[in-house]
Image (cartoon, rainbow, N blue to C red; front, top):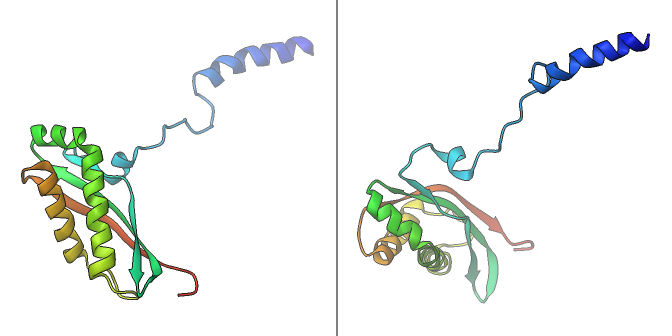
Length: 145
């Protein structure tokens, strides 16, 4: 009996190590860029948020997911190296939209928002060629408002 168990264990070991079992193979989680696109020209930006302030109180928060499509390799490298400056410019543009252009309980205007973001990107990079691509715009209303 012990010999049969030992023989079974000896045969099962290599099969389990080779992945021959029915367990699913381990996959590494996809990066944010891989989930959005496989394009080399796409440069994802971190999620941005800005408070919606009207009549001296916070009405909610605008949350934005976006990226940049930069076909020119030199400009894309410059954009990667200018990451902190780009993020600051984008946060400023989103805050400007949230406090100046956006009105509470209305849908966000992607055209107006994209225009402000595009202007800030072009100004920060000092060149055109980086196209703003919006992935997601969410308005979260503050509790009780």
